[in-house]
Amino acid sequence: MIEKSLVLLKPDAVQRCIMGKVITRFEDAGLKIIGMKMVWVDEVFSKKHYKAHVDKPFYNGLEKFILSGPVVAMAVEGISAVETVRKIVGGTEPKSAQPGTIRGDFAHHSYHYTDARGVPIRNLIHASGNKKEADEEIKLWFKKNEMHTYNTVHDSHVL
Ligand code: CDP
Ligand code: MG
Image 1 (cartoon, rainbow, N blue to C red):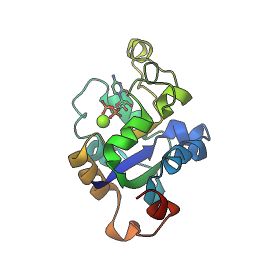
Image 2: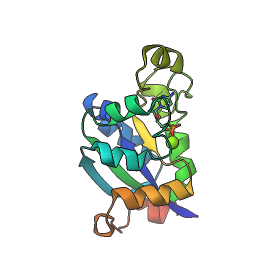
Image 3: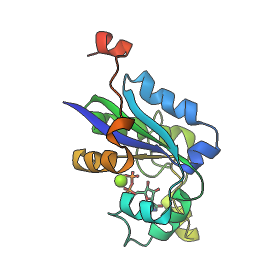
Image 4: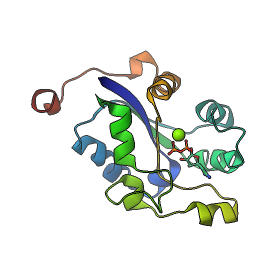
């Protein structure tokens, strides 16, 4: 029931200086950040992380986007963390992402707009899509000694 999920603050979130606001959304929900670092990804690593998308038409634009600046990688832990994080993040397309979600509140890019221009959809966040993806992604992004065990107030008030 307690799961881990991988969250990335993509280069647009870092460069728009909204890292704190975005991280607060996860902390406010009681999720625990058990790993966190800033990384500038290269082509090889991007292809590993986005292995499910490398053959898709939008991949080149996506790679350029993810390499355009440092990202912040977080391992996040909580009850059904994969689903809970996706709920907080919102749908892939900011234009149709629900208000109250990170993508719905901080962006409004649409597929219609980006596909017409051949540019990637800037949606601020990556979040693991399912448990299997989460396990693989945490392993790819974090070494064992970069993950931490500690107590937060949520351990006594939520769990
Ligand atoms: O990130 P999420 O799991 O919500 O979506 P995805 O389907 O796994 O796609 C990964 C990323 O590719 C998205 O977050 C977008 O940044 C990008 N993408 C894009 O630029 N253009 C598309 N038509 C579809 C996805
Ligand atoms: Mg995905």
